[in-house]
Each structure stands twice: as structure tokens, then as C-alpha cells.
Image (cartoon, rainbow, N blue to C red):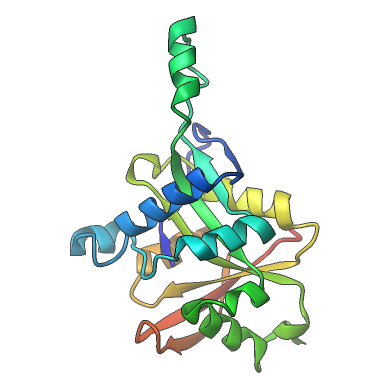
Length: 217
């Protein structure tokens, strides 16, 4: 569920924070639709990754109330502004250039695709000898980075923010990567995730790798 590329740069041009407004959710929704596999070329899907689903605003609003999305915003902090330019900037809020969505297992059950992912974890899945259903965990429902923000360390920044914002309450973060989205899986593994299992979605009629990140480390 990702449109990303591996990142190595330590430059932090896009500050990461929790989403706070419906307007930001609308930008998340727009970025998701722009990166759907049906809306990108085969070459882009192969080299940059793609998304398989776009979640409705109603679900994004539920996330905002329970586990707010993490967003990276376009930064102009390094630019000097005249008073007139500063006022113009205030009137035109920064743009969401990347996001990562979080969902509890309970919230996941309200969406057909996420419910399938949660069912895989909640049935017979075992992690390091413990049933996943007994663990404190979140689902990362999706991560996406706009083309102009790729290669700038944003993916790692989002994962660091997950640990900062949710690591005190949750121990593990699970997400799904479509089997043919090799670029995305490579980026996740490089960031410290590990493959946990594979299952088939009837919603998308495709195989998915479930991967896990330890938020305690």
C-alpha cells in the first residue's frame, strides 16, 4: 500500500507532524488518487511504486479522531519573506507532500481491504512466539510520497515520527505491500521492516506481503 522510493539523504526539507484538519485530509485523498496503479504509467509503477487503494474521506476522518495520519509538508522555512510574502504564505497553507495512515484493528474492520489485512493478523498469525491478536499494534494503512519529495529522506522521517508519536502506546506496526510492488518492499526492508507473512486479498484479487516494524527500537 505504498508509493515510495528508498531514501538515504539526511536533508530534512519536509517537516513531519500529525494531521490536524479536514483540509489536510483532502490533500491526502488527492495525493492517493494521483498515485493509484490505474493512474500511473507502467514505468512509474515499476520504478517509483504505486497505490492499490484510495480510502474514502469518511475513513480518513475516523483516523483523524483516533490515530491521526502523519504528514510531511512542503517547507519554506529556509526562505526569507517580506511582510507581504509572509501574509501570502499564511493565506496559502503548506502542501501535504507525503503521508502515512494509521489504523487500529477495530477501525480497520470498517474498510473491506483493511478488514482482510486485520483478519490475517487476528486469526492464527504468530510473531516471535506470541499471537498477534494479543499484541499492542497498529496497522499502517498506507504510505505515499509525492514525486517532488522523493529521495529526500521523507519515508524514514515518517517512520521516525511513527515511533515518536505512537511508540509509547503501541509496540508494533504492520503494513501490507502488494507482491508486484517490489520497489516499495525494498524501501521498507531498507528502513528496518521485516516480512511477516503473505496472504491473498479478495478485494484486490492479488497477493500481499505483510511486514512488521518494531516501534520499541
